[in-house]
Amino acid sequence: MTRVVKFRLWDQEDNIMWHDFSLGNSDVNDMFSNLSGQLVLMQYVGTNDINQIACYESDIIKRYRDDMSEYRKCIVKYIDCAFYAFPLDDNSVGDDCPTLLIEYPFKIIGNAYQDPKLL
Image (cartoon, rainbow, N blue to C red; front, top):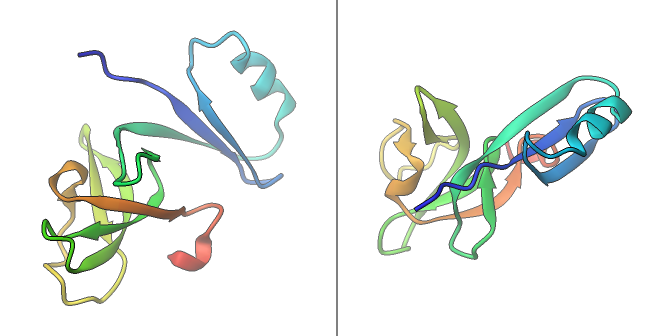
């Protein structure tokens, strides 16, 4: 099985999100030259949420229990060669420790850049 490697890019100055490009894409150099401000590169985590939406670093998710009965609001981060869901709420579901993203079902509800109110 081949892992899909793709990225999205947030331009903090112009508030624009660029989706689904690879670093080998010939259009990337043109895109970078046309962007201004501070840029944030986010990698695809290699899996999709319960609605088959691609998940990236800095996405904000609802991480469900296996039975889908309860959830925690989390942010996706890349730490030590793995993607983790870090809790953002004070909910009593589970503990406050981050979990590997693939351990539980999840649903994307936004991202840290376009939806900062969710943080």
